[in-house]
Length: 254
Image (cartoon, rainbow, N blue to C red; front, side, top):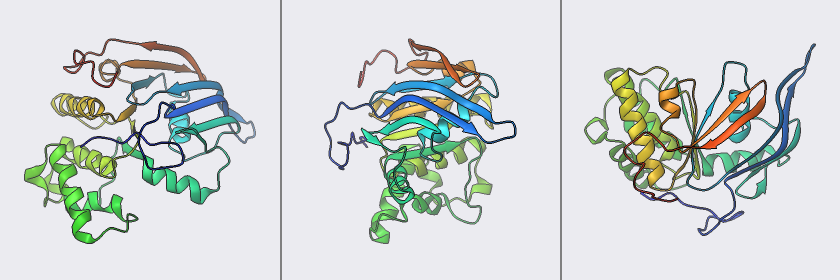
């Protein structure tokens, strides 16, 4: 499984355009009083990056994630995905880009309890217009990739927390997205499951997937190759770091 690097406006490869480019982005929620959740954010994220976004509660991390994932629009400034200004695109076009190019992993796994792991992953392919068998094959391959070959037909209630989060990751990457957004993905996991999950994110990044992780946990942030810190809706530091995980000596995709 190799993750595509899409040319802006196409499904083809070969681009050096940033996956994300934000210029002067702000987000204000109406009051009274109005809440300035983001202020003048300038940000570029290159293909194949592994980025941790940190900061205290109320720093603007979740608001930034919602903008990165095309779940919300900026109040001012511009936001580009693969060179496409998505700030003012019609919602139908934004939904299409979100479904094709962005995968999401949240603290809560959001699995349907009466669907198997395979069926939960297949739900992400519902708009692919491929035959059922092809969708099932792709979902099975995604589950194998995250180490769940033996749990393909299991229901969520029979899975551990770590296994459920791996199903959620398989669902997020089955369509080979451009970008994986993770919002506190280890928040409901024990230390062993957290380490396994972080190893998995590192291996997906080594295959070319751009990974952005929102986290309060310094040990989770330490796995990334770049750390962005936020405070009061602003980016206050942005640094390249030497990641603390087994993939840090490969130099792959850098």
